[in-house]
Image (cartoon, rainbow, N blue to C red; front, top):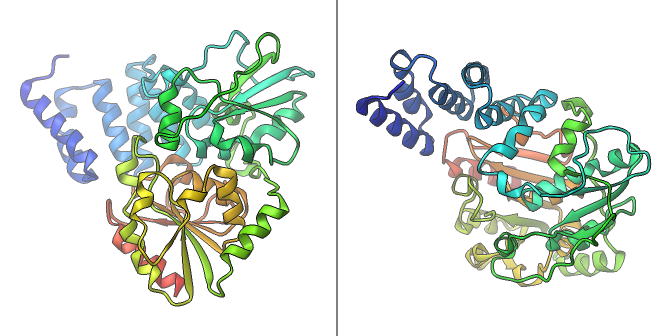
Length: 395
């Protein structure tokens, strides 16, 4: 059905309002279009997405299922339905729909073209399986927890990660073989370390593994439900490195590590990241010593009263060693949150009003990390109120 110029203008305006976090106004623009465009799958899907970001998962699911019924082979609609189900904690259904991601433009370039077949969850019977990171460093840390379950399925497990994670993953309990990521997209690696180049070791060719699976495909294949999420991976930091940082961080005050920005190339970075100045109120608390764990260009925003460790944080293993000596980590939704949670360190996570699916909705705890506490925006874009709560808690 052809869209009139007037409806197109109204639709485009709704998308702009959605991008600004003005969800009620976006819905006010989109809902009247239903009568003009009955059964229009893109419109139904957009309504489902806006309702989800607004926090109404019931209506989100209803609209997305109607969109799927209208366009059963539309991968993007199925993907968004998967996100809504994951937000709702319906992990088994959600991860099944999440498998459609490989046909979505955002993820298709990350699909690896291996000659070995994709593992579907069947018994491995001693076969070698490569499990590999497909998205960010935080995703790899979150989902490498499935390595023991894959091994329990009878497989010899090889873990492939980006170079900044290699040393950390070699500390993972269980003794897994770890290899550097073999990626044809060097700019992906440059984006992680913002200009630092890494020499990659190729995965040995020919018969070195029998099947393969991306890390975020493992929850679906292993039938994960909210109550059956496995514990995080355990990393055994060398005692000498722990002692070094424990001595360095000892000041007689509570040691708090801070991160305020994620990878600027992340699609939702504008909503999830904030400026270093936002953490300035914390540096005025007499009982607190603030240590910046921020890396990349945003590290230059560290307030002067904060100790900036950016030059020493050469990889995630070094960051893990620092975290082991801290009393608390306060971070936005980026890889350090997963690292602190995996280490069992108290971590306060700051999330936007429309947060990532893995933090669910309406909870201040996380089923993924027992030591995590979540501080959510009460209004889109309002970090000031969140920081007021943080400061009050620290006092």
